[in-house]
Length: 389
Ligand SMILES: *Cc1c(COP(=O)(O)O)cnc(C)c1O
Image 1 (tube, protein in one colour):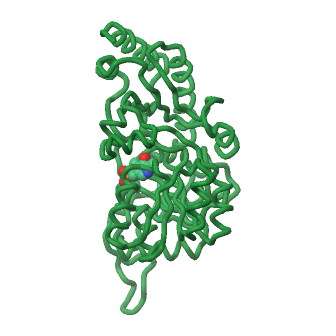
Image 2: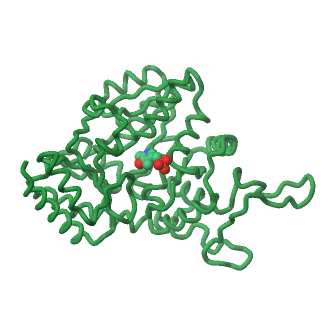
Image 3: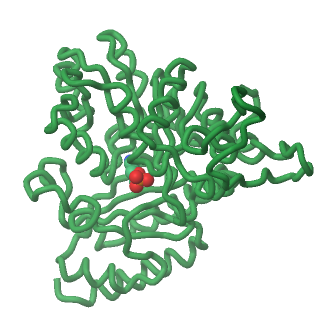
C-alpha cells in the first residue's frame, strides 16, 4: 500500500512496469494460457480465468483506491455481487439488504433465496428500528447501498458497521454511485466493497465490468479462489479499457459534480420541477451523514415533474443533450424514467412503498459544457409548459 493520493494511484498504477521494452503504458495480455517452464514447475500465471496480468493490474489499482488487501475483477457488477454471496453464504445464512437496492441485486438475492441458497430480508436501512430488528436475527452479511438509487437515500456506514460487528455480521457496500474518489467504505468499517465498474470507474459507457474488494488478505484469497471456481473473472480487453478509463476518474468525478451542482441550481428555479432528490440539499434526509462520510455529493440527481404525464413525456422527448437511457456514470448525460425503465420490474405497489413516483426522473450528469446542458433543459421545460397540463 502506498501513501499516494487517489488521483496519483489511478493515473500511475502499472505505469512503466513493462520489463521487456520499458513501455510507459502497460501492455495488454490477451492470452488465455501460459507456458510452463518445465514439467512439474508452475509458472506465475497458468490460465487467464485464474489470473491475467492486465486484469490483475486493474485489480491492484482498485484495491489500493479502496484501501483493501485485494480485489477480484469480474465480468460485470452483478457477477461481483454473485461472487460474494456464493463464497460467503450457505443455506440458513441470512443477508440483510436495503428495500430500495439496485434492481439486479434485489432479483439476484430474491431468486437465490427462493432456490434455498440462503435467506434474505429487505429492510428500510434508514429506519433504526427496522435495522435493529433485522440485526437481532444475526445475519451473516449486511448489504449496503448508499446513496441509493434513484432517491439518493443515505445510510450511515460507520454506524451500521459497528452495529453489524456486534452481532458478528460482515458488511458489504455497493459504492458504484460515488466511486472511491468520493467515498471509502472500508475505512468506515466495511469488510467488502463492490462496484459496477461499468459506471463511473470505466466512465465511458463502453465496457461492462465489476470489482469486489476485500479488506482482509484472507478474504481476498478466499474470493479469488471462488472467482476462479465459478468463472466470474473479467476479460483482459475489458480490464485494459477499464484501467484506461480509471486514469481520469478523479478529474472526471470533480467535473461531474461541478456540472450537477450547476444543474441543481437551475432546476430549483423551474416551475415544472417538484421535489428534488440530492444529498447536497440541506433538507435531504441524511444530508448531515453525507457531509461526514462522503468527500462530495456525487453527480446523480432525481426530481419529480410538477405537471402532467404529457408534460413529462414532452420534456423528455425534446431534450437533445440528455439521452433517454438506463445506466450512469459515463461522459455523456443520461435521463431515465425509473418507473418505466430501471425499476419497471417492481409492481406499482412496491414502487409506491419505496417512495418512487411515476413523475420521477433521474439524471446522470455528464461532462458536456454545463451551459449547453442547462440551455437544453430550459428549452425542453419551455416546450413542456406549452402542453396542456
Ligand atoms: C449497474 C449497477 C449494478 C450492476 O452492475 P452491472 O455491471 O450492470 O452488472 C450494481 N449496483 C449498482 C448500484 C449499479 O448501478
